[in-house]
Image 1: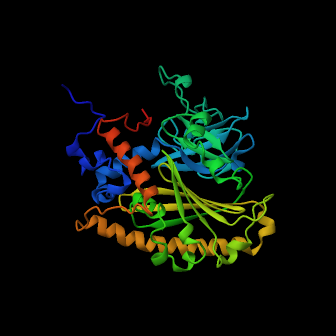
Image 2: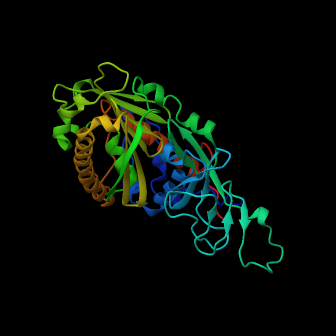
Image 3: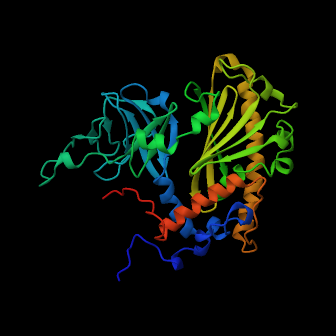
Length: 388
């Protein structure tokens, strides 16, 4: 039998047996170190991220006809645009001629024009003009429009998916998250600022760290005192999870945050959604994190800050960002050491804590399912449209 070239054999994938480990949390081990350090796994991760819903920014930035934003997902450059008909669309930011860029930054334009040779496209992706291109026999503009990718809006945020899909598929992927966060309301928050934080670790090592509060007492001693750690709880769903904790007596500036239209609210919530999205939720504030792989041992974490009423919050926003930066640096420092240990060959997968690593176990379960699909078991592997 001829082998399907889109399927991998176990010999192509390190520690393939671990993908079939379905042990319950009470008997579960962590993922093998090779999954954080082997370039073959990083190549699989690149496609599974591209074939999932990826946050790109606030919908307010592409609200009017002609407004465009640029993004990059798993190394693929993208442009998101609001059409003259009001429809939101996303395309590969690659001219069909010789790969020139259409846009390099957010802007408002009547059409998209390649910045290399000037080919012109409508906001719906149709090829309109090819200057100084006479004599190209058999060339058909109708079949040389931009490559479209999946796009949708959810709770005032824009997501794309290189495997395709639209708002209904995005809604299915995120189903239940907004309701789980009530009375905090996601859709009425206003985007304020974006930051990027580089981390010298595999993206999964950073996600692992996010998925548990087990490390709070040792890694975040100041932040640890702001929460009622003994009331910390985890809720695990098939493609997302939420961690909750009441703010403690020493909540500091957190106690000054307020959710518009809601009385006293003193809960923090931390949501992860497959594969690399996190929402850090406090009253009146949402911090959207996306962990973007750059190499097998490097990632960057995008921080987008949304607030109920930025003008009224004054210095609270600056304090919020300063506290977040300190916590992020503490996380980065430990994740970088862990990455070196995972890649050293000295690590053997340890047992998970049933008390604090239920959400981490859920992430690993989703990861194992994706790797099984890659190996040809239990579903279809991640597939994205390539440029041909």
